[in-house]
Amino acid sequence: MVEIVWFKRDLRIKDHQPLHDASLVGCVIPLYIIEPNLWKQPDVSDRQYDFLCESLEDLTQSLQKLGQEMIIRVGNAEEIFINLINQYTVKNVWSHQETWNDWTYQRDIKLRKLFRVNNVNWNELPINGVARLLKYRKDWARLFYQEMNKEPFQHPSKLKKINIVSEDIPSAKSLGIEKINYLSRQKGGEMQAYQVMDSFLNERSYDYSKNISSPLYSADSCSRLSTYLAFGNISLKQIFYETNKFIDENKKNKSITNINIRSINAFKSRLRWRSHFIQKLEDQPNIEYKNLHSAYDGLRENDFNEELYYKWCTGQTGFPFVDACMRSLINTGWINFRMRAMLVSFAANNLWLDWKKFSHFLSKIFTDYEPGIHYYQLQMQSGTTGINTVRIYNPIKQSYDQDQDGIFIKRWVSELENHPIEMIHEPWKSPLFKSNYVKPIINEAETRKNAASKLYALKAQIRNSDNTKKIIQKHVG
Ligand SMILES: Cc1cc2nc3c(=O)[nH]c(=O)nc-3n(C[C@H](O)[C@H](O)[C@H](O)COP(=O)(O)OP(=O)(O)OC[C@H]3O[C@@H](n4cnc5c(N)ncnc54)[C@H](O)[C@@H]3O)c2cc1C
Picture 1 (tube, protein in one colour):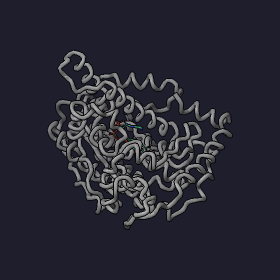
Picture 2 (cartoon, rainbow, N blue to C red; picture 1 turned 90 degrees about the vertical axis):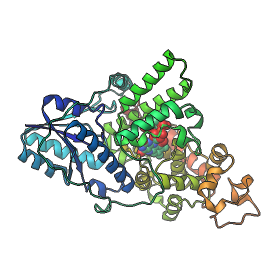
Picture 3 (cartoon, rainbow, N blue to C red; picture 1 turned 45 degrees about the vertical axis):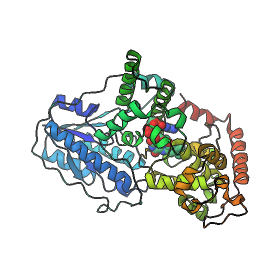
Picture 4 (cartoon, rainbow, N blue to C red; picture 1 turned 180 degrees about the vertical axis):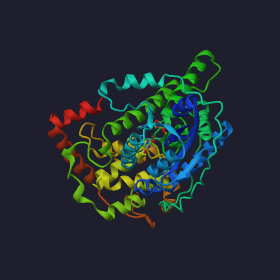
């Protein structure tokens, strides 16, 4: 008899409840299924797959040290489980619950049926403080903190070796995964995740609040844990635990001077936001492809301008700060929250593009792509939730505020390398402007005003509608 621990977006051994619980019951097959059809979906790309491969290599080594290496299978999850059930006596499959894209949601529905028919218990355990079948959203924050304040699970000290052979990890190219060139990205793995967390808490967190929106400093001052959380190289609970320990140690030992409690608290709030957004997708999976509020259906859908879209996603809008942010994001797979929000606001409001038509472009270039955060944020910045404040960024103001000396712009927009600083934010205003850099593709102030008037008018119309009330009840804590 074997216990199958199915690793999904939880590629770690520490604080892994399914691994912990299964090892108390019997012999464990640690399983990871590389699903080629998942990697053919339009929302993913090779940068995420390569991060996954590094995470699997790291996890394989950790499991090997415990006595049983990771078993990799490549193919359709249903067929792989049928083969395993036919080969071994399987009573239990253990995994974390997965709140991911529509493809994984549909796959899990089929698997639930398969396990039921074959008398296999699928022990799906909660993760990240996200609750399945949550009755009252008002209870959520309390339940979340209850979970986050628990001790992380210890990993088993030993696993019994089973006679089973793993398959090789295929390359992104051999699976036909979309390739998008980039210059650099973080490396995957549990060990890396702990190094990043430790360096954040002990060395980089002091100016977190101050630098959080700076395109120049945020890459260092922010935690940079998002990709590790997206692949589960470290658990959210573990980060809470280590952060609280760091705060306590500071209270006891005043010689720790590198703590800024305001920054640490701001960081902890964002950890909660992560689950707060994923809970919304858990409660309503169609947020991935439908406006949260139906009053917004048809608002932008028929106005999609391919040329404007192309200029936006290649960083050629003629707005230096927008283009610098886009080029940096494409090349590094990461940019800070405010810059993500500004890029989306520019596409949705200035260019009047429907978020559903550009969501996959962004999800493919974020190495930390997390559907629960991604789709709700896209809708918030596009103003289609109907319940959040309408927020339209002025990209020229952001440019002056966040990149005063134009250093970030010059780094990424080489066409402006030799341009005088005084005119770097609005080069089109300079009478002496000579460069191969493109002219602005739209009138910023006019398009922003138009978008605002449409969005404010619609919001006022639906303020007290039944639909708005239902959405608030379902999604607001
Ligand atoms: C349009 C848009 C799309 C986004 N898509 C993603 C995505 O696919 N994956 C993703 O992880 N984040 C996404 N974010 C949220 C945020 O930008 C990133 O989490 C953050 O920039 C990651 O950097 P960090 O790990 O250094 O964050 P830190 O500032 O150090 O925050 C710590 C952690 O808190 C969470 N977090 C931070 N900000 C937010 C937020 N606003 N909402 C929810 N959780 C947050 C993340 O897990 C992050 O790792 C998106 C934001 C916008 C505006």
